[in-house]
Length: 182
Image (cartoon, rainbow, N blue to C red; front, side, top):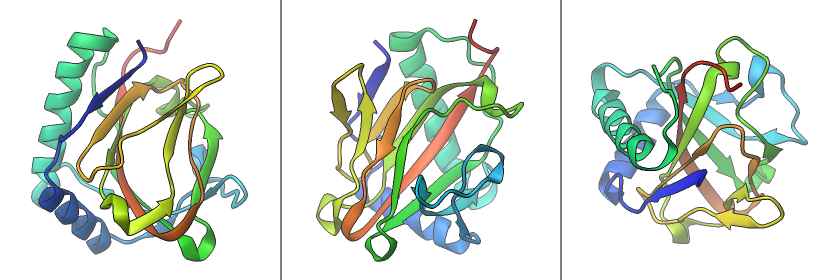
């Protein structure tokens, strides 16, 4: 099993607070590993949350849930969280999306990603389209759209966010790191 769901990792009120924390951070145009921008592949605004200060509670919850899910489902060798929390916003105004990709890349940090956790922050009726889909070898699994729901998957799995056609979708992503897969 390379996917796992947590239906209510955060409450809807907590999800709204995470969106607010992301809006306080400087938003930037989302790129690919290495900072490369390909608008035909990814159109999103991103903000980074530190795991200290106002967002420390978010990181604590993520770490606890990842540890539990890894023990129960994945059994990966996870040693640390090397990257800050990413809040992404996909807006209908620019057909926000992220085409099929995996989270393991060529960079020294990206090549050690083992698990990805994506938390849905927007309420499901706030947008159309924008589904997070994970490729299961010919079939796609659509992640839960409820605010606060989390989906974990092996970072090598192909996944995407389909274009948002109405409204705005916000999500929180965190990567968990360990020795490179062999």
